[in-house]
Length: 205
Ligand SMILES: [Zn+2]
Image (cartoon, rainbow, N blue to C red; front, side):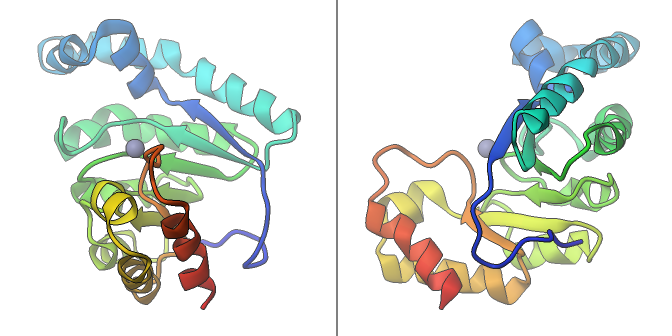
């Protein structure tokens, strides 16, 4: 799946949190994760109750001029098993893909390799993934069912390495067939500007 955008473009990117991340904030990460084991029916009920929020907020941002929506929903492999993603959240992501009337980029931090095959079948337009997942493995798991975005490392490469190191990671991403070359997650505020420029320059080159 590809975006209908030219290689060099400027777009307004909106952002919403999905029901899983909203539940972390409302109930606390630890309490919510324990609930997935102790009371799965209640977790299903909570996630269902939270579903209107990302859908409504995304629609409002698209109405206000956003071209794409980032859906951050942190069911990461560092915290939950892939079956948890498949059973609790994947059906809801499929619903959001239909309900949000614009391209949606799902973002999940951490190691997500064991659930990318499910994510790729969500109907969402793009998955933004972290450097804990090697780009080539992400492409393998996703097939051509979903566009991929990432996965230039923030804490080591962008923050402390050289522009040449950044360019090498960009090349790895391009070689792996990653459609959108980008930092893996929120960019540290003290990241050298020359390293951020190197992402763009290396991708163009
Ligand atoms: Zn992140």
